[in-house]
Amino acid sequence: MQLEFYGGAGEVTGSCHILTVGGRRLLLDCGMIQGGDSPDERNRAPFPFDAAQVDAVVLSHAHIDHSGRLPLLRKRGFRGPIYTNPACRDLVRILLADSATMQERDAERDNRKRHRSGAGRLVEPLYTLEDALDVLQQVRTVRYGQPVEVLPGVELTFRDAGHILGSASVWLTLQEGTLVRRVTFSGDLGQYDSPILRDPEPGPGADLVLMESTYGARLHRERAATLDEFGQILRDAKRDGGNVLIPAFAVGRSQEILYELATHFDEWQLADWRVFLDSPMAIEATAVYWKHADLFDEEAREWHARERTLPGLPNLTLCRTAEESMAINRMPHGAIIVAGSGMCTGGRIVHHLKHNLARPECDVVFSGFQAQGTLGRAIVDGREYVRIHGTPVKVAARVHTLGGFSAHGDQQDLLRWYAAIPGRPPAWVVHGEPEAAEGLRDALRAQGGRAEVAVPGAVLDLGAVA
Ligand SMILES: [Zn+2]
Image (tube, rainbow, N blue to C red; front, side, top):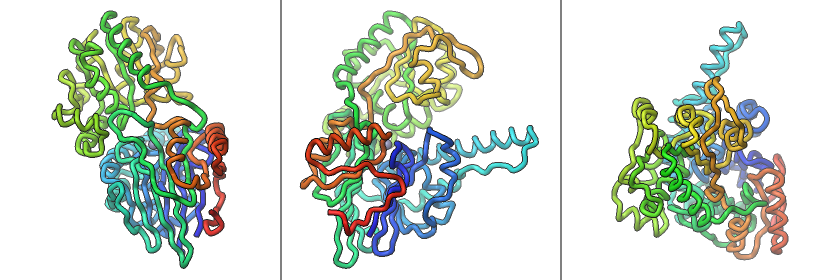
């Protein structure tokens, strides 16, 4: 019985760990590597196992850095079941289809370039929409708290991780002969008291815990202060007479922003604005959130029961077509535009930035992480000019960064989740940059826990643990 750290050890993307129990192989997640050095090459590299020999996958949540290589796994021979939560299944369908479409588009663009320059071999997309649709057929859903035998000797229970809708921590009981081990994988953990979602759920004991550490060395800003700031920005923006642009990820952040606008409608004086959700993917994801309202926290469930319309904002327009999106550009003021992508690397937000960024009466409100090298980062860093579609655009609009909107728990949240596991089992820290992972390890040790930072490629003999 063993556990091998493969992806998401020493970094924040590409989550994937390999369990071997009684000669069978189970993957925990199969995520895409994003950012860093040559991610495309690394995603294309062979897996350190034969995909056809994998017996099952357990998927903690829908984000691409946890699910994004599932179609590739299928393409390389995997035919087993993928276990996940019903809401995660609905979201991962949207995200994998989008990812596959991007892979196909990127390969096409590369091939056109190669063709023009006379360069030889054509590139193949990492996977196609067909691969993505095929792998979705392998998904089996399991509700939170419902134990299920996923392989002989492997019992799985999902518990809510409070990170995005349908996100789960994975609680496993493994049996091989007389050897029994309980292994827990945190998945990505959300913040306590965040809107819409429930708090990360505590679980029973474990012999070993794999813990994410995205913000293992940091504390988030208080949510109340963040919301006060958001409200003030919107009130000021109304006085200034421009538009407000909110770049947001389609799954999670867009729904959270709409929820905050709906629940602060009077306080933030939103009646004179028109709100646009300008992203087909975010519209689809919002419908999935709505469908699974039984997973909301108590406050959001009450709100859902009261509102009955999606998502409870009287002046909301959902923009599905390109024409509907372009029509917003005819509004010089009075529009709050929520659009993707979250880091302004593509999508409709880029067009809105082109129209509004040079206007001092407009506002751009960032609420998520902006990676190095993205348009979002250039704007947040205070550049005077940025390039949009090859043209320099002056940054005259007011730029705001809201600090408290993370889907990830901070160090305090992570410690709180760990402290609720009886017996302080040894923890292996994964899914974090080295500084964050070491920060969480030290904090766990300071609380009397045993903790190590997982090394990629390291193999743990589970018989020797605990
Ligand atoms: Zn995630």
